[in-house]
Length: 178
Image 1: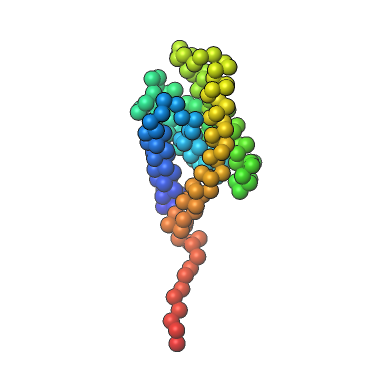
Image 2: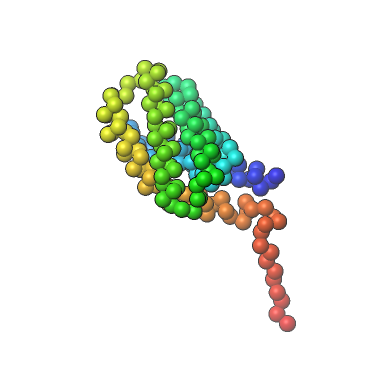
């Protein structure tokens, strides 16, 4: 009910913020992919389509605001989010090394699909070695380094008492002194 709606609004708001930060960085190329990390977080920690929803929403925003080809960012992000949803039951969400390995897998899948789509649309990529050494490896390292702190911060935010079911909240009583 209301709890799921609040978490959905929170996650979509975080995706929107991630997209705006991603587009606002004044560099021609930045290895960090915040919308991908948020979709990975949603899929790996919440499951049940949250990764797909966040990936599709982030990709749609990126395509609408800054993409030469429609669908170029939405398809890889939605696919990575759906993959995160599908591996969520097998991943220990509290184990940092499994979080990092899962995100690295998602980055490889995302970047591979993105490269295939860009090639199919005739967008110049500079050759396989250029893509691997100057694009994929730095992105892989950046996402791996950001995974644990970002998952920790997002976990703190999502687990706030305001977003918990009122029946699951701890009851606090105020005692009067005699």
